[in-house]
Image 1 (cartoon, rainbow, N blue to C red):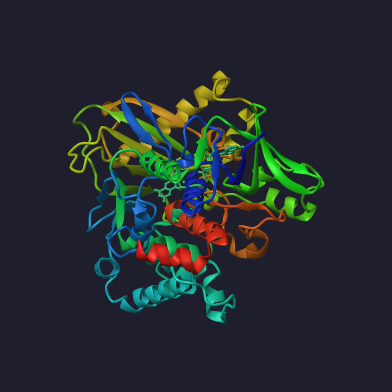
Image 2: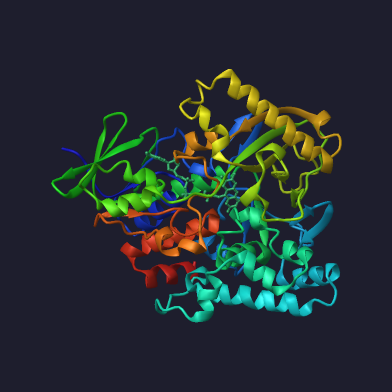
Length: 499
Ligand SMILES: Cc1cc2nc3c(=O)[nH]c(=O)nc-3n(C[C@H](O)[C@H](O)[C@H](O)COP(=O)(O)OP(=O)(O)OC[C@H]3O[C@@H](n4cnc5c(N)ncnc54)[C@H](O)[C@@H]3O)c2cc1C
């Protein structure tokens, strides 16, 4: 007789694990199925050349005592045995825009002071900007772990759903000011023509409140969640790729994996991209219009990353991120020119201990469109042709050239490197295009872009970055929304606020 679970969760990314935590803590019998040998999705890290590289969680915001992520981490037990390093107070992100360097300090008061040093006599601009940020945050009650009051939005809140670029532009005609205020937009894959102001506001506020790095690998977070899930009686099985939902007439009853194993439950939560979730459902079992809408969700741009081992003692540990934007426009990702690539990079030095003086590894990331690798999309990691390998090597050299403009001598101090392209991400996460942050938020199409945690199948739910926002913050919100469906939002918010 097949064992029957209360819930089967597909995918062990942050969203799948947090949802499994909430449900198993409540006493439900939960099974998580993961296609990869390792859990964690974009929280995974990998080991090469004796270094551990995190794939997609470089820094975390709002982790100071009393701040939002601090409460969330306490609830999920993520302070036990994991160390976090607070980034430099006077600069957590150092951004070079068209040759000029700007600091982003921690805290809104410091940021105001820093802004006025760069742009004296612009108090009004900054204060108007900050008041819009606060309005945007206050309009999203859940982002302050408060119960939303109702679903009505005021005209002012509607404004916050319009273009981030336009709103920032309206505050001052000075392009330097516009660039500075929007300079963290790599953190949300910002696009001039699409990103709503509330996304800019939530992500910027999240990092400005306080910024931290995990000391060591990001998969400590996934492993800690898994340990708790198991201690609550939940199960996690890896190397089980879900390939098909099983129905008894119209009722969803189970899931089949690529190994032919079948698992049965009352309810299902998919942490897989909604478009890929639709591929698991045979025709006639879900409304055609809904399937079409999920299949046509537009994603954020992908990335090209160098994971570099540095020669010992050659590269100082930097307790801040570096961004380098060649053009005098921080929204550059929305229209980068393939021939001029790369014109931007983000550099991160992961801390191995709390007081590293040198970085044994660095990561350099930049945007890359999936179209650049499309011609090799039928290959797998083991079967990529030589042409692809040569292409990616050439790209790696170009990125090292650009990074050397900021760090002369960088090339000579590289011991070894690993390259990941949009195809690497596509294959290890299992989405269609290696997208950095999943579904894009587009103010032009808020309704057709909206993804609810409920689907058109009554016992199938969604969670993860494609519901709300990406990242530790956005995904935690999705997990709270999905988990609250079964444990009650009031109770869950109380537990989070009292953790
Ligand atoms: C390069 C990069 C840098 C980033 N930097 C930061 C950062 O600094 N700070 C921050 O907060 N966020 C960052 N993010 C974003 C953050 O990592 C993600 O938003 C978040 O981890 C996504 O979690 P998720 O649960 O939505 O999904 P995912 O991590 O995408 O997990 C989905 C899981 O489902 C599994 N799966 C897929 N198909 C199947 C199937 N058929 N059967 C079973 N399992 C399946 C996948 O293997 C995966 O484990 C970054 C992301 C990237 C890519």
